[in-house]
Image (cartoon, rainbow, N blue to C red; front, side, top):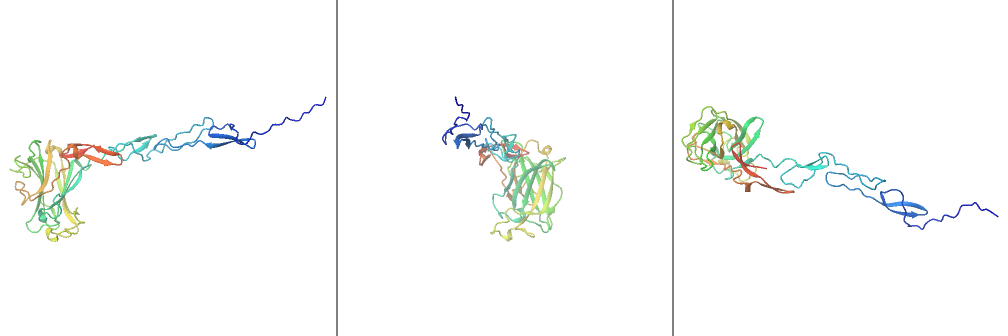
Length: 311
């Protein structure tokens, strides 16, 4: 009997036949010329904005899910948080809309009063240099000749129901170039008028103070229709005189800013020459901020004597 030890035939499967290449990261394995080849690889996409594309595990076919670098920008879909960043694979909301009310330009516009009494801007801020609230306001003039002065006061109400002035902090400027004339004056008022410090009497022992800067930027400098005869002093169409006050809570107690007004001849009990109309908010409806994440509604509250929006 003859024995044939040759191997039995092992014909290849037809090309395209299904097979398994042992790699779970290839999804469509087929035979090609007797070899199992993998195709249609698993695509590893980023899970969300705080992750980056991972890599596929050949044993399981599952993708890794690495975090994006901490600090990567993202959006948490909350309009009340800004500057959102990824932290540990999650989107974390950043700062809220600013608590600083900022600046208000005179609602009467440029040159709506004679220069020495014309106020152009009022600002509110806080800072390490002042353990209280920083107020600034600007006169349109940069110098005062002879005995002329620039006089302005911030008026406060301590009775929420009547909006009449109970306190006033006042600054006088004079000279060429402008400078502060005399000390900051803090008055008690008669609580009978809104924009007048009636019966003005110096309040002793106050700790609030003000300084004067003669050449700060005029908020209306870009206007081409300015009337040069409305202001006095070098570069008065582009520069203003600024008073900056650090108003301490100890001087005010619970009070709300009414407005900042200028007065004739250091007389805050007289009718004002000009007011900036410094309302930052009167109700929560004034405190809405709209951005790419939607609308954030804050609250109108008294902060440092000024009704302003908080979020």
